[in-house]
Image (cartoon, rainbow, N blue to C red; front, side, top):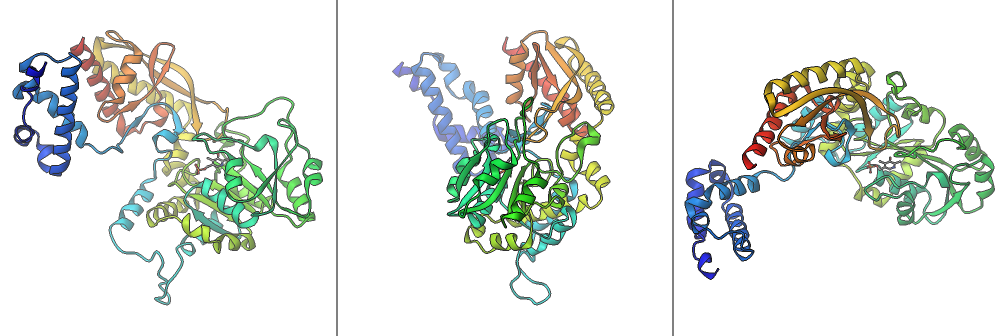
Length: 471
Ligand SMILES: *Cc1c(COP(=O)(O)O)cnc(C)c1O
């Protein structure tokens, strides 16, 4: 075995060979390429030790060069990369949630490329506030008196509770103490804020008297939290927002609503009923409403808070606000996204998340047929291609347990399993995420852009070809 180690090439010899044969490595930072070569050689040493590599010709330089090139090429690609989402889950947290509208992307690029008036008051030339840039627009689209934006909705909940409820009690229905994934638990965030949680009601039923009995001198607010990723059905009662607002008024307590996904468009016309819009929650009298920028809204990651000026002012002056503030790129993307909502028809057509959520089943069926014929042409006998009716999901805690009718393109490869194909596609360039349904690898056209379809066919074709070569 000792003998074999001597066949391993020198680092410099590897670097010279890469320089000559891999253009990407010529443009990359030298230390990164060197680091990758060392990692490759370490891997080869392990293989020798495991007895998996015993052929001198494969260890020495021309023999190992193809594997070395593959390894370095992969290592030089950015870690955060474009992924094709064929899962049909529109707001997919693992894949970056919302795709920005064209105008939002342009605003980000413009803002990134030069100086701007982020905190410059153009009327006076003095220091301004980044929040004043967006507040008016927030009020226009939601109907609220005032608004503020922080890093994400978890930060929004934290800032609200820290500003309004710290040291006191906040009353919440037991059925709304939710964990929303990524281990974000409402009770844990509340604890961090220094607010004391006062749970009322039973898991499935909560009455107005449960809240009113719990109110005492130490109570600071009444809180409602959207149940997001689950839905209680059957013997179930929740106190409505107007009832809670009435109770709050009687005791001079603010009513806070964490809407979670929070939408500015009523999706009930598109088969997604039962979700309040931000505007309706504001008009029903909630004092503070928080929601995410990158869920159903379809904008950048952000935590948007709207409501009564008096409370928004308390949040604004909280030192924690400084630690949770948004950056200029988020602000640029959010402004452009909100502007589209001034005309709901534009929002429906131009914000990808909104367009995907509201896409009619007939359009999806047509897209599925077109993808299927493209795949039949590209794959030939390598896979059987069929169409089946199924459902997509909104994801991101939006519209829990609501099915969105769709058409799936199902692939049954002839030379490998659907699981093998799924695994292979994860390391494709770009990677493709799909679904396994009844032994088939399925693609949902809802979350694929029309421009991505040729690429989808190409990566699947390559993945199946690869399979054949390794067999
Ligand atoms: C998603 C969600 C949050 C967290 O929002 P982020 O923007 O992901 O931080 C908070 N509350 C509810 C009810 C949610 O659904």
